[in-house]
Length: 332
Image 1: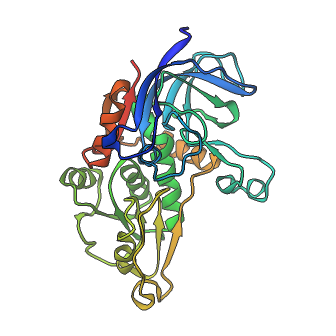
Image 2: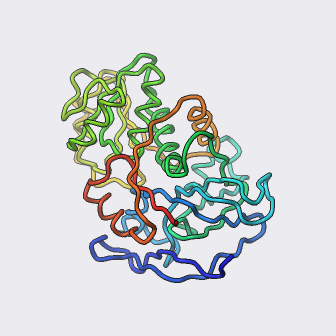
């Protein structure tokens, strides 16, 4: 194994056009106690990476390597039941305290000491990465590395957002924004017998939504919604989505970052027991449940491939809305 690798660091957060990322020749990380060294095969490009690079999220680790949708190969000897050569996934949630009131009650995503890959510690925009074995994921069979990468965040957080939206059996769901996470959550909803309406301006995204089985894809849902999920990081869509809900409807906001929300009118947007719920990361249990679903139901994962050296271009295309589905970086 080489002792150095290529990787991208956030040099100074700012607009992606200003190239806040710098590609460097770096030492291969040394795993600490209880950690696995992983050779990265692919790493998905998540909008959260863009928020880290552009400074929408506060700096947690100066010069951090972004990326938290990592599919790779275990290099170090077995920990946590993993052996050299095993395919493994590295996701956003990296560590929790395990003893606080949230961890003890199955809400580890709310842990006060939680740490995250590509924000608190180096992630997968590199040829190697380390991960605590307790937070490494076994992945469903029957998918390529490229298909698996988006499942590790886009898929899991979409699954949690869908559950937070509490769509009733046979209900009507609106999805605002249709990127990497939304196109996977839509397939879970459809498998549950939900009617899905997709709200997006992208012609390519509308086409994909209809191909996957959405009942409509446009600007306005054609009927009142029981639930909605906001994937676009646009706060101005919150009152629009609330207005489209039927009585008792729930809006789940899936992003880690959201622009400002306009003033809400109580009677128009919230009265008759409409509600807004946020989605904060996910638990390892969410991931296991979602991966079991992916084992049983063959998901269509729409991806656009980039070389690791093209990370800035991938993030630029994501910011400009030029990526249909999910962007994925390949190290080979």
